Structures are given as structure tokens and as C-alpha cells.
Length: 530
Image (cartoon, rainbow, N blue to C red; front, side):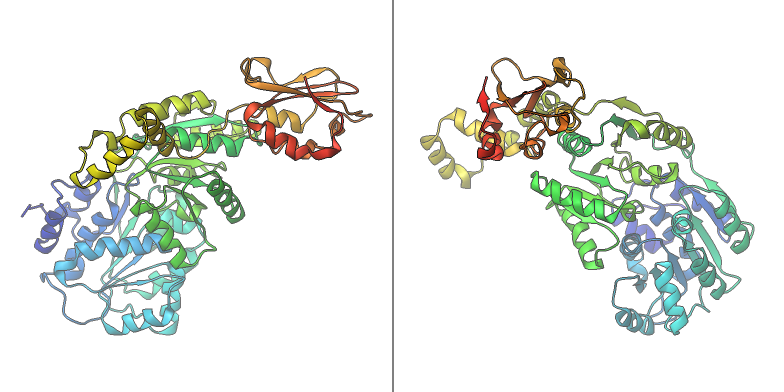
């Protein structure tokens, strides 16, 4: 069994079973023997192992000289977390860490059955983990009694204050014994946290682990310049380009989450949604789908920005710009954890550029400004991944030989390889041009080409020109009765649009020709190919 200095034997054994060989800086810091009875105000990078850190730190406080809890007894520790997901995750972490101590750990979170929680609290609950509002409810109902509590942990304290839980936190802390030990963990330490610490901690020792001033060193930040109309397409292309095992896309509202989830599902991405309007069961199922590989992308509000443990999360996309630098860091901190590199991508429209630059300055982040990935870049990256695909490196299994032989007899090697390539491409690729946006805002000048010829035209032989000889009258934006249908074509399927006083020429890709003709219907009698 691996021995860790300052860690109680049953917890040492639990760490060894989890194949811990070393402790993280924050875990080592809180185990300093000089801090054994001290209140702590700890700040460290997201993903640094804070849950295990406070689990190790409070063990001597709540167990004393014992190594095993009594079979039944009142709560001796309470852990407060800002969200249901984080509270349940903390319970899971503490459960394996304290397993050999025979600790009973009970969660109390909104969205779960209150009566089931009350029964658990009446039975045997050594450690209670919960959200502020639900814990306060149990205290007021008399189902949670805290007079024997020896240790209190506030996890993600800054987030709880940001979410308006200060009154609930003060109510809970005022209910606990004054001689308790209080451990406060926070990604950042703004003035409200300092004020809370002064009021509810006794001469707290401030711990800042190495690297705190170097925000998210394992995360590459990219800001993509997009237009409002091509934002969704740019997000899809960023997802396709990185092809992350797991990705989080953050939206500002629940409605935006629902809309984007629906749209991305229709694009062929495997996505789930996560927002406050979902039941706890729906939220749990969404996270489980990400962890077991049934979904690769989670579209979420900021409810997901704290404490979620997604080991394969490689990409965070900010569809909507965060309101503050702290939210930017909290969202982005879901990736680049435990020594693994991650990518954060922000979709920035022209009018949001200055605000985004200020966010980066306040967060002390250096971001690279880019244009969204092009179709050529995405397909090129796809090709590299396909050639080195893990399936191609594996030996043929004996049980598959018979069907392999049948496939080889029925199809050529080229056809089989082509099918494999198609199966490896996930989600459509949308050329990053502004043709559709240009069509949506016709010029007031006749004879003007919509878009930049160098970027927005098809290669020779790849586009078809249609002449819509329709009298436009005084308003160019009424150039064609099929206008609304035309702008619903996918990006890249519309090339140049030339508008004159009595006719309009529209370049359509060959692939979209049949859909274009079907969409405009018989009303556009003057249509002819040029």
C-alpha cells in the first residue's frame, strides 16, 4: 500500500486502490501538519483535485483518533456545493475515499425526492453533501440537525455567491457549532469571499497553489471572428475540425440550448442538452451519455460550468460570450484538467470583439484570433484521422473472418475503403463563406456582385448560373418571390448573386440544383439556366 504523509491509513488504502502514486499540489498543501486544526481558504486551478483535497483535510477533524465511524450517529461533516451535479459528484468522490471508514454519506439536492432524503438523514448520515437551498429546507423542517458538526466545507464558494446563495449559506453556517473547522475552496477569491471568510472562519490560512496566477496553462484559447448569421455554421465546423471525444457548447439561455440542440441533432451530431429546466434524472442521463460515449457533445447553460468531471472533455465552445472573466474561466476550466491539454473556442461577432478582448485582459489570457475552419481544412484533418484510425491498427479478429471474406467477395477494396471513410465523417461541413448573409441583405446598388469573388464563387464547372428575370421594382430586396426559400439553402450552395434593375443571376451548386428548382416552384416562370 502506498503511504502518503499526513493521510489517515484507511484513506491511504483508498488512494492506493485508485492507483494514486502522488498527490496534487493542492492536496499536499492542505495536509501540512501545521494546518491540522486551522480553518483554510484555498484557491487553486480547476481540475486540481480539490474534492480529494478537502476529503483528506477534514478526515482527522471528523474521525479524531478513530479509523472507522460508528455504525450510527449524527452528521459530523457538511459539504455545500453550488449545483446538483457538483454535489452528487462530490458524494461519489467521497464515497470511494471514505469507503474503508464505513462512512455513511447522504446527498441533499434540489430535484430529488425530499422524503427519501429525510429517511436517509433519520437513519445514519455521517457526512451530508448538498446544495444551499435544499440544505436550508431540511434544517427548517427539522430533518437535518447540525449541532454535532465538526467540519464544514464550502466548495466553489465564489460560484455560490455569484448564484445568490449568500443568505442560505449564512443561515446554514449560523446553525453549525461555532467551534467547527471551516474549509473554504474557491477558484477565485474576490472581495465577497474574503468578507465571508472573515465572518465565518477563525484566522483562516490562505493557500494558493502553484500556478494560480497562470490561468489555465493547459488550455489553448481561440477567438473565432464570425457573423451573426454564420455563427451556428462556424460552431459546427469547429466541432468537426477538432472532433473531440467530448465537447461542451455554452449558451446564454435555456431557449438557446433547446434550439441549438435540435439544430445540431439534425446536422448529424450526437448531442445532449443540460440546463436548469431539466429534471435531475434528465440531467444525470445527459452526463452519463457523455461519459459512456453515447453522446459526444453537450449543449449547456452555465449550470454546467462548475465542478463537472468529464475525463474526455477536450473542447469547450462559447456560443454566447460569457458575461464576466470569471464565467469565462469557470466554463473553460471544464477542459485542460489533470495535465491534459484542452481547447476553448469563442464565437465572436464584430460588435462583441472589444468586449471579448477586455474579458481576456481581465482573465489574464492570451487568445489567438482566427477565422472559422474552412471546408478544406476540416476534410484535410478528417483524412489524417481516418488514415491513422485505431480500427485500422487492430488485428482482424478470428470471429470476423467469415464476414470479412464475404464483404471482399461482394465489393471492391476501393468501395469498402470509401464506405469506411464515409462512416468516419461525423456531421456536415459548411463552407465558411458569407454568401447567404449577403443574399439576406441585398445591395441598394444595381449590378453589384454579392460577396467577394475570390472567396464566394464556385470553382470552374462546379456552379450553375440561373437567371431570374423578375421585375424588381423600387426595392432590390424584393428581387424574387422565391427569396425566402433561396436563403434557406445551406452555406456553400450559393455562389455569386448579381442584381440588376430587371433581373437577378444566382449561382447554385450542382448538388443543390434539384432542391433549388423544387423550392422555387412554378411561380418563377422567367427562370432559365445561363
